[in-house]
Image (cartoon, rainbow, N blue to C red; front, side, top):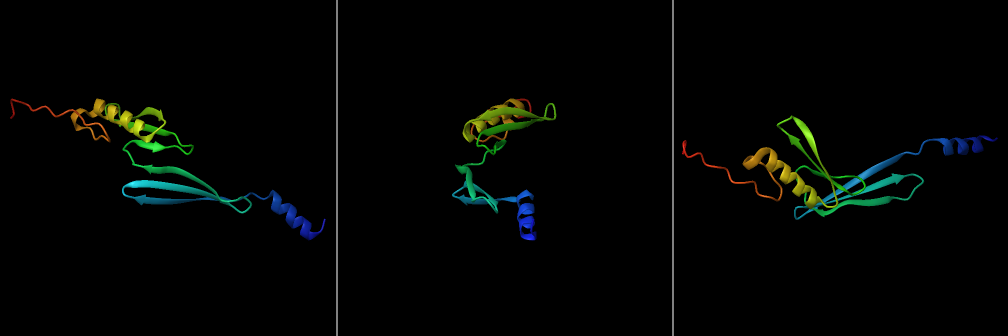
Length: 124
């Protein structure tokens, strides 16, 4: 085997290095995130994760596109899994329902309005 052939052979067995570049564009309060996987031997692969989606409290998108929601339950001091959803809006609704259940009128919500705070007639 010549030295040129040896270099080619070693190059094939060496690990390929990949890097992921993310471009985030925010227009009118809507976010668009584009990921590009770049490799020396592969074409650039572009995948759009979030397109024209509002960010909601307690909601995130998985790499493969589904939306998940979770909330911190202060009563038991642990995170509470709320599930996977097809859209960010559905996940935000699940978060809002759980937040109202946990915190009542003091809940910070995305879409739903928490119940009004009751006025204490004795102190008021």
